[in-house]
Amino acid sequence: QKLIAELNEILAHDVVDEAGAWKSKLEPASRELFDFLPKTIQEQLLLERDPHGNVQVAKIETEKMLIAMVETELEKRRAAGKYSAHFRGQSHFFGYEGRCGLPTNFDSSYCYALGYGAGALLQFGKTGLISSVGNLAAPVEEWTVGGTALTALMDVERRHGKNKPVIKKAMVELDAAPFKKFASLRDEWASKNRYISPGSHPVQRPWKRCVEPHLDVGAWR
Image 1 (tube, helix red, strand yellow):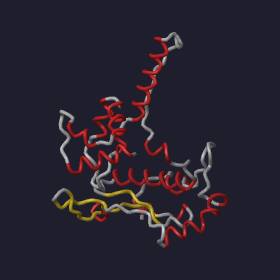
Image 2: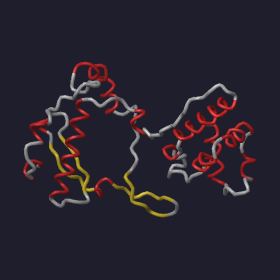
Image 3: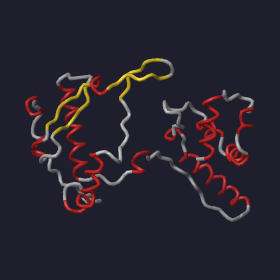
Image 4: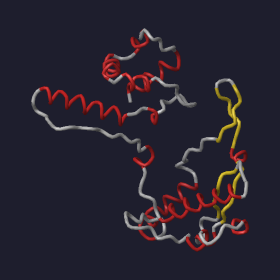
């Protein structure tokens, strides 16, 4: 984290030259760590920052770095006669899967309805829309599925000296009414209703009756 913070500051004000003179601006410990990393990881740490000036962590292949480090260590052990087996690493970027909880019954129903709604929109030539589901506080049979115009979600922001249409970033406001409402119900939702995680067993499918039998425009109003 310290290395990334220093790189963010350097990249915000200086050009990274191929000769590596910019490295002199790193603290000694950060410089040592940077030089220790594989060249591909070094290059990924220097990629263009996001619009907020942060490193794009998802583009840093830490899973491949770990595999490379394990291979290096095992080769050292093989040379010392302490390892004779075979290691073949297979990387996979888990991204959001790695830091999220198991889907609840609500999540499963909601995402199925979104996907089915997207299919319906495409079948009827309704493009430029995002599949959306409303009336979520009601039973699943009473949900409304339709499409929301992408342009309705967009705002104009100044990015790199130009006006750009973007979907405005929305942060969770811990002092706002929606989060306070969630906090007041969090314990109950964790054990007593449809938001409970079903675990590893097959998920009950309460949406089956309302979206699977047919694909009719009227069903999505």
